[in-house]
Amino acid sequence: MDQSRRDFLKGTAWMGLAALATEGAAAPLKISGTTGAPMQGFALKPIREVRVACVGVGSRGSAAVHRIASIPGTRVAVIADLFQERIDKQVQWLKANRKPEPVKTFAGPEGYKRLCEMEEVDVVYNVTPWHMHAPIALYAMEHGKVALNEVPGCLTLDECWKLVETSERTKIPCMMLENCCYGEYEMTMFNMVKQGVFGELVHGEAGYIHDQRNLQYNSRYHTLDGHPDASSAGRPGWALDFYSKHAGNWYPTHGLGPVAKYMDINRGDNFDFLVSLESRQANYHHYGRSLYTDWRKDFKVKMGDMNLSLIRTKLGRSILLEHDVASPRPYSRLNLISGTRGMAMSYPEFRVALEDKTGDEKTHEYMDKEATDAVLEKYRHPFWKVAGEVAKKVGGHGGMDFIMDLRWSYCLQNGLPLDTDVYDLAAWSAMVELTEKSVDSGSRPVDCPDFTRGAWQTAKPFTVDEIDLSKLPGDFSGAHQDEQAIQNAKQEGLNK
Image 1 (spheres, one colour):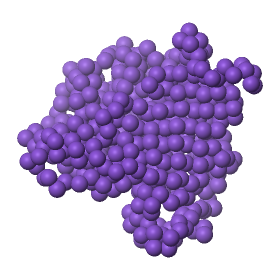
Image 2 (cartoon, rainbow, N blue to C red):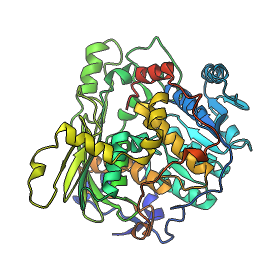
Image 3 (cartoon, one colour):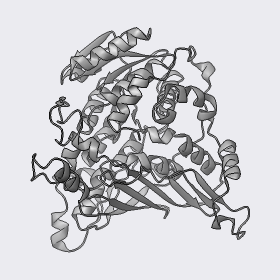
Image 4 (tube, helix red, strand yellow):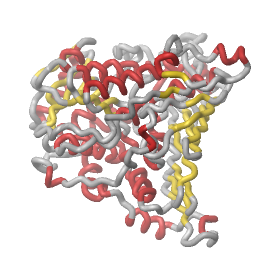
């Protein structure tokens, strides 16, 4: 039963699938249209100096300010946050490091609107809690500002479609700041895919496994308005507040983004449908009751410890997507890609197994260290060859954050399309609501929307691009590693 986008969305936002449960079978949730994807490959005219407004300068946002200020041809023009003290810290940092000071700052909940209305802004860099990603991006695009959203890009299918339609109507790019697409191993594997090293792609694995129990019960910012309250140890952070109300995968894009790029999702292939199930919730409850027995004994978390989703693509490929932010286990994004000639993965370490010729059985074991190091060197991505040294100096999750910021600024300065677009943001972020719908329906299949409305079949694939640093107006002599920002990020548990 195909449905138009508008018909599907009437009355469906976050209502679950109660009707399907009573019917005993899952009805397809196909969403289609006819207008194609005009923002694929879209580029603005070159911007000589990229003027960035940073919205949200807590731990993650403050590190973004420092990275952006280090990129030639880019400056932090405006800073907005709920609290003046956070803004003041960033202004002081810019002064101390001889960077241009913001022309304006805004404190309070309406600050993002005021900066979007300013002529002195080209880009709105959005590092706020999840529920504000879509509203800020929509307001930015309506006022002609490039919208860059932290992950996930939005939370609901309705928000996905609003972002797509607004970007198309305003002809303003909207990109998700998925830093993991710029990791050194992820980009190496992407280059290997594009060189045909793995043959025909068949399967990928993606995930976000990150023990956040201490973070969520001891967040410095406990409420959705971000207000700090150091006296309230044991209170759930704002993310855990979401987890208490919803099932599904609330942080899908760190693992899924790179795999979607390997598979050219939206550019030759597309997500078709998914099935999602999850375990019981045990770890958050155990942690809270064991350490904070005097506060809110009745606090319940709906989201299970482990969410497992299986995604099938239009070309018949499979993707395993995992999410677990509650269990005591080592960090992982899985990051595996497998094809007809072999495979590679990067957790717990980079490992690769390849056939020289069909049937040689070399893939029964991983390559030894010497051979693996040779693969890493041979297929190192051009971004990391050119900017890897300065990226690791500036920092940001091993340098991936800086590579990401350098790249979008480079594209805007040189009139190039951004690496990913609003359709990618929507397809990857849609997993938040789609996985919850499947879980709530008893793990029945749920169809994935085609945000390109058929354009994926003719769109150009992702490519291995380059950065020519000579095309930037300056060098990185002022770039340095900001130890305080790194420590703040670790304290917040953001070491992705």
